[in-house]
Image (cartoon, rainbow, N blue to C red; front, side, top):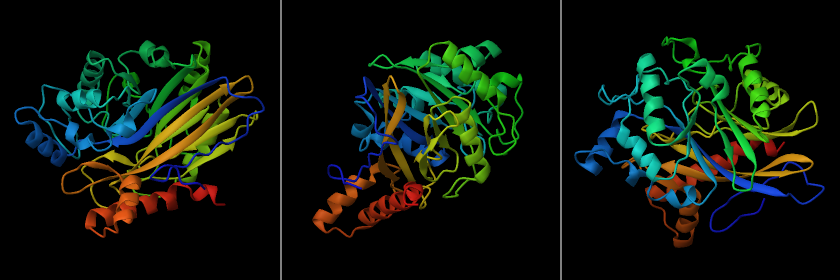
Length: 360
């Protein structure tokens, strides 16, 4: 596999197109955005009276910007009437959301096991805050109509209509009412009821979606490889008509793979992108991925070309680093510092885990 630029980035395409693609757009996905209290305290130190999260992203922002759309998993609610809090029941701040907007984030998924940490009122408050900042969001909803018909269908610069869906396997047992507030599905059970996903895929096509991408909060925490039940459900979701799946929740990176659906379409699955910004700073929980997913469409259908960049959160200050670029620079300078070794370990870990299914 070739090295690209100063750091390794892998381009893989599932199938050669019989004719040149007439449309192409690049989407960027990162993993979990967490709200541990240590992150908040550091942000307060940066901003004084108001927390400032932008310094954490300063060294990685060039990899996030300049693409067509940037998406992340927002793994905390935001309700201003309550103080910021960390694990086990998170509550973020509007300042965090402002920083994400400043860093260029467009789409945030809200279906995850911490969605209801501040109960139903937290779910609703978060939706209001996201709307006030003009974020696209998916995974929770105020009404059944918003859940079933209000998920975003984004029109790419090339004219492709891309639908985004989002679901979670759990809300950590925290109840919420009414039941449509969070897209809660048995994603970790092989025989789970996936009918809501199927209905949403069908509705997306009815609304004119050319491509359907499903983001799933699933799996087992801190496991390098997906559960067999998750793999089974991924294939079922693709067979229902989805084109690609991007996963999160394990807080560590997991592999990706290409599959062929029952009707012969190429499908793409990445099981977990790991943590992107988190207070979990021990290895490998501080290792994440930037997935740059190029969506190619032509008369034959849709294919995907993924490019990966390894990231690592520096424990001393929570700054997100480009592990691949830093590793290459350290090798050039023959630098054996702790930061260089951390980046090298992160980059090596990503190569070992993320591409495991491609070496079979």
